[in-house]
Length: 331
Image 1: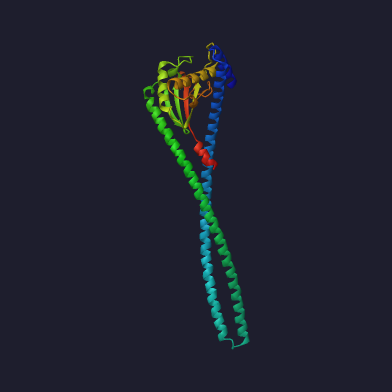
Image 2: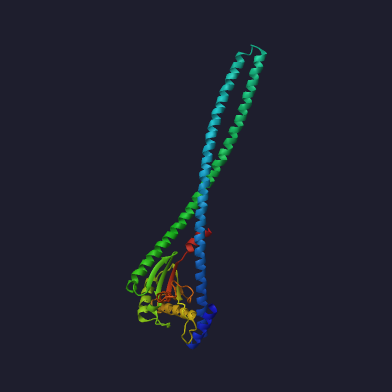
């Protein structure tokens, strides 16, 4: 596509007697704009993936936290049971000591039994004490881990909330801009203009019959008015990038001159729209990128007259600036 575009632009610039330096500057600017558009699209996909991964991580941590809380509750219950048993053994030990003192003079056999019972009790008591200490240590470790998980969960929740807040603000700004655009173009509503919001972007589609005579790249008076109205709404927007795409139907181009095929036609129509929006609509050239897609991105069936009319169009695609989101993700 780029090779054909370069050939077409070279022929056009030679025919119009435009200096080669100006052509090189326009070509470099167009290449930069295309790369920037690709970069923003890639970064938007990366952002969406990152937000989904953060949400998945948060869900996993929440499940682990719930399991740990249940485990901690079980250990606490077991600790209380062991403590009660320990107290019971202490009481039994005291009773045995008292009994030993009372029966000390009653005979060596009885004393031996009592001593054996006392040793067994003391051994069991020591074992219970060891178990209680182990449970206490395990409970403390679980509590530390629980606190760490709670801190991690709060941190992720705060980060996700911040990302979602910024995304919501961007979506609200995009919706408001879309509404302003739709209101500005109300007079052209039944003349082949559609304004939509998809995937966080605004798409303004203008059918070719509103803008151009058949096979021409010169915008007619009515189309010029629609483009100027659109430019007036978006010219002061600082946080969006704008891509102007030309599209055709699948019928081969049969004209003559510098336009060789549908690629050339779509690119030159996009360029003509950009010129109207900058020269007559007051937009800064740095805000706009012109591109041609030929017949390769249809929105309707090219086998019908109506479908071809929909496919012959100019799409003005507005993408919000997501630099603030990328800064948060990279922190």
